[in-house]
Image 1: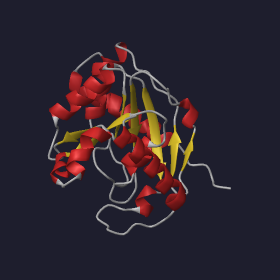
Image 2: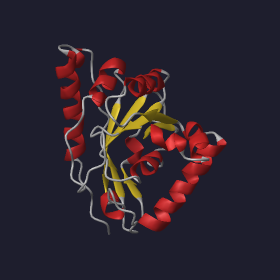
Image 3: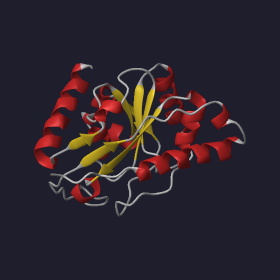
Image 4: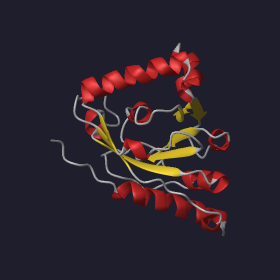
Length: 207
């Protein structure tokens, strides 16, 4: 980890544990090396940093391009492994950048829904995740976050210090045969499959 990334990592860990009683269930199933796509539902702006501290390795993130215009933050984003994307539509340059990260043997987190949920419920998956899987055959780790919407809902400026949990599912490995056929159909099918695995994850009761 670079100095900026490492600083942000440990700061996020401290905030997560102190303010949100943050916990990760099944962290040990996340591979420590090799290409890896962490696929998680999207409830809040808190999701990316919490996904980042759910594993013990550098990961890359997608973040909307407008964040690069914010003074200071814009210069830090590249050092935080942030890949800018155009939120207005399907940004192929961002998808290609994610593919390069995976083909280089690194990890990235992606939100198959494409945007934050307004009410915290799961949304339909977009085909972009399926495209990335089909192009790389990278292992996929489904993850589901609970509590982040209540902590910091979309279109709200209020943060509530409530418990947040990420549950990690078993690693998914897709084959070339899984990716054969009409691309649009295949991409949507793969994305839907991953979203179904995310939906199947349940949050254990806290003691």
